[in-house]
Length: 179
Length: 164
Image (cartoon, rainbow over all chains, first blue to last red; front, top):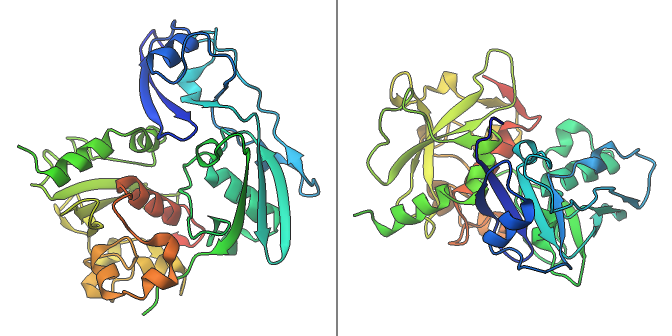
């Protein structure tokens, strides 16, 4: 890391992600206050570091699983939190986002960290519904009762609006362009 | 002075979404060792990384026309940095037969000058029915170059991409 400032990507509910530059010895809380993501003394928000991929290691037979991604101690420094490696910081009121995915009349559920990308949820869903890698690639997540297909890099925390810490998706096949 | 569509594009290049993808090595702008200078606006050259395939490059360059950016979707095709011209068809990425990948990057439509995808201006204009068939992929002014690049990324990392 050599003492160099790094770019951090800060995600919070209901807002577009933003870039913040921080030095290795800065305390994360100070960085978040400077970026106006939190205010001094604000305690009710949870801060997660990194992007969670835990669900991809969940055994196939597990039903209604839950991530173990713990909120970070924001009194620690950028260096101590290894943000040069993690890069992403998520500030949220939800400790978990309850996701249900519907496909072919079946439903799979998991309680994800809000720091989970749609890409990871999609891979998890393809795995849980046992879609083989080749065919599964054409299946994407679409928010229930809408035509919105969030981008793979979007995080669950950016898609839900507390106090509702839950979201419903349908796993749909992308249409091959014709005509 | 930069034009409004150019300013909007430059702002999107500075966005967290674009920079986060670039930091992960998913996409980016060519370095000066590849491209001394970007072409005049509304043309821009970017690259998108690919999943490893035997004898295939680790990225493809995209030559995009971004006229009326955001209001109108981009259009464009592959670019060859070694010749500074459109990439020859035999050097373009190939997909499994009849796959979505193969359709998007087909070269038997419009001479391969545009991508066969709802996010491509030429393709979308010629296929108004796609708006109802693929409502999740309708380009509007809320879309950015990141949406476009994420589509490229998903395709290049799909199992349907087989290399050259």
